[in-house]
Length: 475
Image (cartoon, rainbow, N blue to C red):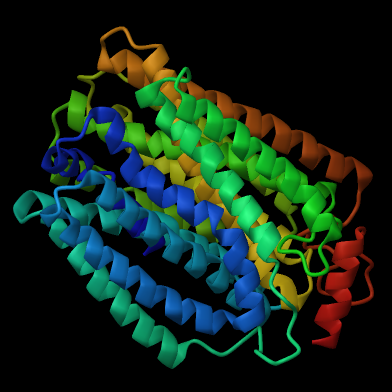
């Protein structure tokens, strides 16, 4: 549902923009506002789930999701695009609560091993399946009915899922008590504000230009707040992110994930707009062209699980996953407008899911095995923050490139943005490959490795990983 809700602003984006009289640069805000808040707030909700219980947070998030989906549909009567953007942003906050709580529940229930690998791989397959279903139903409703029904149906589905979650999800993690750890309000407000302002500057720049005061001011303030966040967390008694404990391995993982998923945000946004604006395809036609995504996602999930079970190191899988993001962007960037679907777009949607469903479980398993049981929410929120925030940030940077390479030709604008996607994913592959080679040369049990994780006597290299082993044994 998180990915389905993201797709709901991709396909009907042009129709929604026409209803509000929006400029073409404003339409990118529909998915970007959702991605901005879903990424920025995930760090906070990962910690909230550790404190109050991940099931409580999971169920409450469905209710919040339903409310703001309903208001997003009703926004058509206000005639205000700003209000619609706000509704999309508040939907993103619900996604920010759902993802880390769901991942934390899986991380707590499953011990390291083949079952955990399969669980996270199947979870990752929900991304391409959900995105495709969201695209199909949003195209169907927007083209044959009216676009607000996209969000009304979303609201109903979220309400149903909330009831099912309350009935069937086990109660794990976080037991409220008078002595529970205090929440890090200073660190939380600092990082959320910093990430939001930094992202806003990039997504606003295509419309106002970097010379505008609002872009320059928000960019500088955002960077300062992000920089201040790290010393704040080092001094905090109960930090939202244990900066002092997170080692170099985690930094490598997050960097590779961020580069890969920022390129994916560019790939999916510009591929859909390419087909609608340049090829003149209908929304239903574009939705039908996404049909290879679910089977490819499922195949990628089982492949990842099988590779992990056979002992392939997660850093190798993570590096290899970036190839598919890069290949997808290369095909799109060189694609002629009039060429048949089967020569390009079909292969983009058949190969790109391998990047999604190999990178996400590999990174999640590595971070999940780095932290103790009671901090699974932090691990889940870190990886999810990077995945969702980087998609929104990538769209903002691509918008800047699009505007500055424009020759009054939409095709040139789109190709400029896609070349950026190639650069980001290509750099991610290089960084990931270097990290994987280092792990192999050092012959160490790196975070998330399948070696040594099923034996409580095998030491892990980092202080945080050692703490994880101790806490898992006690649990």
